[in-house]
Image (cartoon, rainbow, N blue to C red; front, side, top):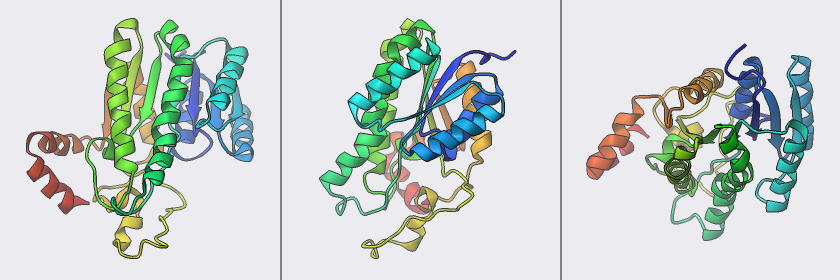
Length: 267
């Protein structure tokens, strides 16, 4: 028996990448799982793989940028499990480009997934999470605390996630809701995917790397997933990985000019 035994965990973007590792960690700890994703084949494959390990898991295909899809998704979840104990808002994506070359439409599209879909899912689950004294886990980024170059609308979308997480803590923490903002650096991937620069030839090649070329080691997603579970059990407000990045964030707040210089040097 663990803290998570029998609890219901919902993971958006849970069929690949960090989301899949988080789902595996919850399954290993005894939680029941709902995997929400956009691509039906990937969702079904993940559901089957989790069930073969003995997990009580269900996969739901939904476009969480659309409110009717979110409503349907959470109605199905409640009908299936009757409760929600943790919502992991993991679905999201990055981008590349100069900030002035990033159009308002590109900002809107990224905000729709990285922020507004997260808001939709949180609102849909909030009643059940509060009743369970449960957890909201918002996957941010180091970019949620300090912006960098060549990543278009991404820092603005993740800064918004950080602000929303703090608002939730302040307003709903007294009601029993735990909110964890996770700010990781680049996540290690098997495919070592690089971002295409077609039409972006005037930005550095290094910007194609995960993290936009930030000078830090890639994070093991399995380790990060287990750190997230532990941070939830301790009801921590934030998890920053690597932890030394907190010093940069503090410097940037207190001395913005020095913070900018450090970011220019280390990204």
